Amino acid sequence: MATHLIVVEHQSGKLNKASLSAFAAAAKVGGDLHALVLGQGVGEIAKAVAPYAKKVHVGEHAGVKDRLAQPYAKCITDVANAIGATHVWAAASNAGKDLMPRVAARMDAAMASDVSAVVDEKTFKRPMWAGNVIGTVELTTAKKVITVRPTEFTAPAAGAAGEVASVSVDPGASKMSFVKFDAVVSDRPLLQDARVIVAAGRGVKGPEGIKTVLEPLADTLSAAIGASRAVCDAGWAPNDWQIGQTGKVVAPELYFAVGLSGAIQHVAGMKGSKCIVAINKDPEAPIFQVADYGLVGDLFKVIPELTEAIKKAKG
Amino acid sequence: MKFLVTVKRVTDYEAKVKLKADKSGVETAGVNMIVNPFDEIAVEEALRQKDKTGGGEVVVCSIGSADATAQIRSALAMGADRGILVKHDGAIDPFHVARVLQKVVEKEKPDVVLMGKQAIDDDSGQAAQILAELLGWGQATSANTVTLEGGKATVVREADGGLETVACELPCVITADLRLNEPRYASLPGIMKAKKKPLDELTPDALGVKVENRVVVKGFEEPAQKKAGQKVADVAALVDKLKNEAKAL
Ligand SMILES: Cc1cc2nc3c(=O)[nH]c(=O)nc-3n(C[C@H](O)[C@H](O)[C@H](O)COP(=O)(O)OP(=O)(O)OC[C@H]3O[C@@H](n4cnc5c(N)ncnc54)[C@H](O)[C@@H]3O)c2cc1C
Image (tube, rainbow over the protein chains, first blue to last red):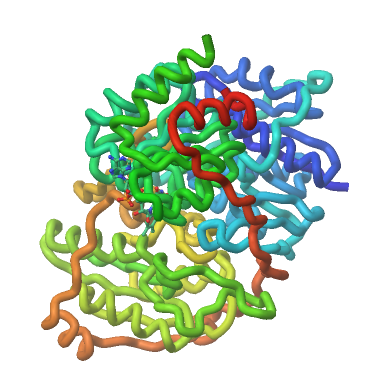
């Protein structure tokens, strides 16, 4: 029977909810679910995931206070081996992408990245070529490492709280050190968690366009704001806002693509959205091919009107 | 300083991706092939860092069929000094890519290995981190800014929720993100010179690596198609649809 270890991610004292998708994916294989929380002062995080696991292992050590791939890979591997894990899972977040291949190497396990479906205990589906192709991959090693595309797995239902126990970890010698983290501060919901996303394309013409035109719409809908690569590259928005093949993958209930052409690299990160609205002045823009509702027009005119109309409609 | 940079031959990001008729893979016949865009950024970074740190050597390595020579030559035309083709026909998984690179690193002894953060074809994003672990080196993925100074690499990484700075002792492995730099275009003299630059050919076998893939692609399929949407005439119609049809407001 499979024994799973799910690596739980957290940031600034908060659970990254994307981790829950890894529990959901592991549950599809079946077997015992263990979780691992590394860090310092992470008792609350452990409690938060206890309802999804049989046992939560808490590894606290000064050497894992900051998430660094080298010491983390060692600690995760040690715990995985100690519990006889057959599968080690994490969300395909930036941190998961950084860390898990290293865990795979250390465990001598094959790895499947960013999987969108679980076929059986060794077979997984995953998007390739910016999501234009879905590949079915088989991992032939006894131990397996998998990162999970969070938008493809709904968070599991909470069960009875599992046991929480501390585990001693030894980060070992490391050739890397943490310097600092400059967080993007925002009062808005996180892109990954938002019910509604308003995404800015180059058509917004500058940071002013985001501020004066998109923000009021986002405020009205309590939405997160995202962006195309072009917008991030231009420095009009933080890099963290980039949605796409090489940015974040999101799937909100409602997605507004504003002044955004809809290049496949962008679409790869948002086509799973429930309802897509495109506003673009070019009727031929490829974004209209993926949009549920398209409106051809000048965003500087359309978006303020839309904001007012939505305010009214919501009463 | 000495840099080892990896370049993968991939389908052009502007080309339409289509499965072969028998669904055995992605159609490459008649499709333009390029250097993986992230690898191109890695090459550019190595060239700039070589200048900044007072010279050295930039060696580019590709693992692939003989056709990948073209991608190595592109990197040489940008200004890299020397190329290595590790000739391998057919599929090779990230673990074996890393094993081959480990052997190349042991031969070449670079101070920094620079790679793309992912290849835009299989989108795995594993090889660099596996390599770092096999070598016991530090790693910095998704690099936005790299500073090589005082025997270490200080790297600003594009992380979730902000920018993270880490320091790695040299030698280390760094992967390039999109905003690390803007790669130069090869000049005509650069292209001419590239033709004469040394390009060695090796094989995984010769490096002592047996390729027995542990990630095996069993098949490909097209993603589910979204049903066609509709254009609406004006803002009032849009709000009506969102409210009453999609029930998304
Ligand atoms: C390796 C690689 C990785 C990439 N990864 C990503 C990624 O992860 N995410 C991503 O987004 N991109 C990515 N890209 C870039 C992608 O190919 C496109 O270049 C980018 O998405 C274009 O951004 P855009 O739609 O904002 O800009 P453009 O393509 O320039 O589109 C601007 C749009 O705005 C419209 N417009 C202009 N003015 C107005 C107006 N007043 N009112 C209404 N509409 C207006 C125009 O009609 C046009 O359609 C990647 C590219 C490469 C090579």
